[in-house]
Image (tube, rainbow, N blue to C red; front, side):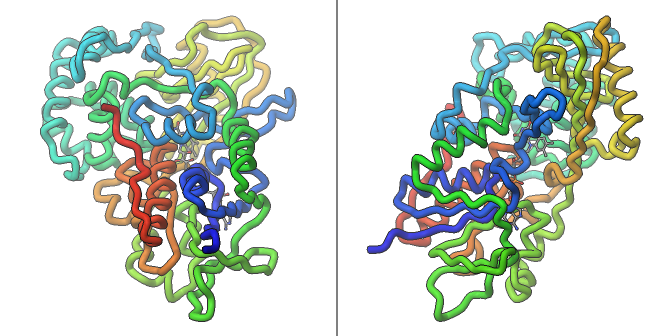
Length: 444
Ligand SMILES: Cc1cc2nc3c(=O)[nH]c(=O)nc-3n(C[C@H](O)[C@H](O)[C@H](O)COP(=O)(O)OP(=O)(O)OC[C@H]3O[C@@H](n4cnc5c(N)ncnc54)[C@H](O)[C@@H]3O)c2cc1C
């Protein structure tokens, strides 16, 4: 029997996770990646001044991201993710509240942390507690506008802005007035209510470019995965009766075929790669309804550290997360940066620099800055968004999809991307008569 082969188009986390799942199950895997590096959106760049590898945007994971954790353990990079047992919330008046769990059973483990939040009144905290209980009672599939739901469940402007909005905007990369309840509920239930370790934020101690670069490459090479970088796919070929499996046309004019093809490209690329007779099928046309949401990260290099805290979650500020990467280098992340990105680079810099000076009184000198806006950072988790997210198995024989935007039950995250890769591998195994569950269970 010949070894079954799979072509994976796209070397982001979804494609990489599919490869990591399929290789040990006897598949010959080739990854075709148009860029000169792996990792997709989870990437780093080389700082021209220091030569330091710097993440285009800091990526973090959470304790509830069990598939991402499994993927990292499998490729041997799990030890590069540092759990932050305490989250530091700070307001412009420079007051800081630690948010950490107590050794009490969920959902009570965060009760004391919420009670200690200086930026909420006692009544606000009771409102939030009541809202959380109502969320637990809500159907996991209900997806009305989250803002409407919050208002209907006794949340006021302050709890929405200073609590629900702060968490949701960072976790879903969308503003509270645009998101649907389904994923908003998921963030709070999986992250805060279900398990004591769910909310723990895991921050990589090395750049993403190393995690998904040399470390990833080491695993793939050791497992005989063929990696072709600078290898853009132009189109998926129309199915042909004389060819077993599925073929793709490369931008260099050549063609490659395999028993199965996984398209693991971003949602705004996938339809352009499909022949018209496939792209016009309703299964695929609905992908066009997915809309992008931007993230802006502002990199600042000072001549010394401006805070000793490893990170800070900002409340009532433009910046949302400040990551202190040491030696005076900080990164400020603004998710769903629709308004900010219109301001232009110089204004963005000045807004963030002024805000940092107010929130962290310091005497450090600013050496330089860099603003990076990713316009299509993630899909927008609007109400009913799952109707536009296709499954990994498609109606086309031997053609599969992967990507954080496919139907995973998760928002657009590294966890969602890895899940999609595992689900695509499950779909291939099932199509080959070898069904197996690869998706990892939730925290127990
Ligand atoms: C600024 C920013 C911050 C983020 N922060 C977080 C965070 O803190 N935590 C978190 O969990 N998630 C975060 N995310 C989301 C996370 O990065 C994504 O969910 C995840 O990386 C998506 O992986 P993917 O494989 O689905 O897609 P991608 O990473 O987009 O991979 C797709 C790959 O396909 C390649 N490709 C495209 N077209 C072709 C073609 N024609 N031929 C060959 N290859 C092609 C692309 O070059 C790319 O490498 C963030 C995203 C951004 C942009």
